[in-house]
Image (cartoon, rainbow, N blue to C red; front, side):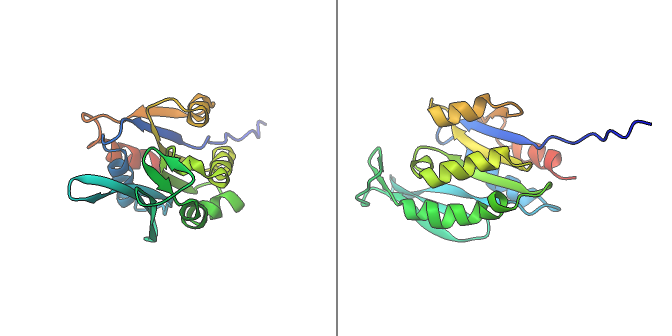
Length: 183
């Protein structure tokens, strides 16, 4: 009698795309389409004054929000012309994903937007991301299209599906992903 049971591998999807293509919108719509799962994580968005981009805000999926980076922040670190507030990563972003790094369970789902230079300025956040990628949970995260040693290594990991977000697929992608992630 064969008692071997098949264990489902967690879904691990990296959404890759150029700035402005709609990666954040895909993640936000995906979160809103999920009916039987409650994801944890965060999204980021531009802060604009008129037509000028002056910073980025981080918002957890449970509604907490703070300014992550701004031209008026002194840094360090600095990413381009933006000073990054690492406390936002360590207090807001890490607290959003902490339940999955401390006590992951099959069926847990993390949505992270994004694994970019500002977010990865935090070594504690990089460590938490590594933990998430080794936990037995489902994970959808956005990554930038340019080369970076940390995200390039994530893209090469076994079991990672790299999906390029384009103007042509961004509207259908949330529904396609939600159908895959719902039981």
